[in-house]
Length: 317
Image (cartoon, rainbow, N blue to C red; front, side, top):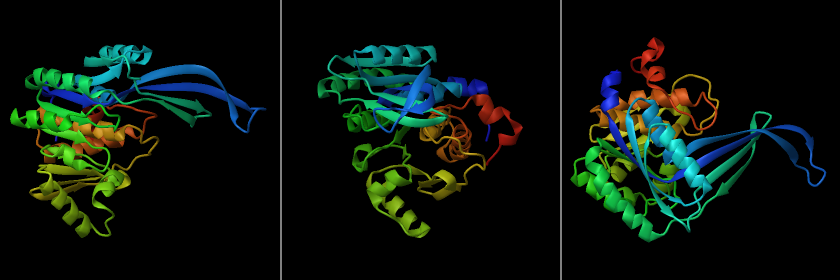
């Protein structure tokens, strides 16, 4: 399946969810600390990237589609850095600010080309600010062709049930990257995209494809979902819908870093659906996008040309 750049440019996705600032400190490791048996990292370079829902929105725009980002952040240095980063990448930011909130920052220390340490800074937003987010959501909803909820379990989607109901009433496709064991909060969505570990938290272990099929279809009907897209790492991905299932195999290429691959998959799905492509047509393309991004370091993205212009990657995988 192929789609023109012009058609992709008309697709508008509203991304709602938990954002974070991804910080990378790169350094040289020449010795062990005399204070404790740990490496001493002499920092030589720093880098900042969009993280969480901001990375999802970034994936949408690098594909050539349009993205708006609705989120709640602190009123701190990290939030202003993140908003500037978001705006630079062509995403429309709609940031609600709470002075008591600490914007989520994930700081990774990299030495000798491997991650040595990750430090997380975060807390949970207040309900009052999340309520004001719903009003902004209502205003933005009619301007977009699809809604993507990116749940990282940081508390920014406290009103997701209400927002899904509004999006559904407006006839918008709703895509959700879920978190946690309570999928009831995503009831009524068009498609949710759990990975194996996330799905297992909800339906328990399965011992055969038949058992998986039965459990997933029961879950889909229970929560009135049009489809469930299970991402399965080296096994590719499977879409379960009313027609049955559609499986696509993983792309055979070197896996360098799986960070953010789920972001790329759901962003690709959302951009295509917003452009008028069906879920079943979108799945092989999203699978291909995930295959490209795992060959890159850190939270990465895929361009339109990488996905469609390279003749080797055209058509179904």
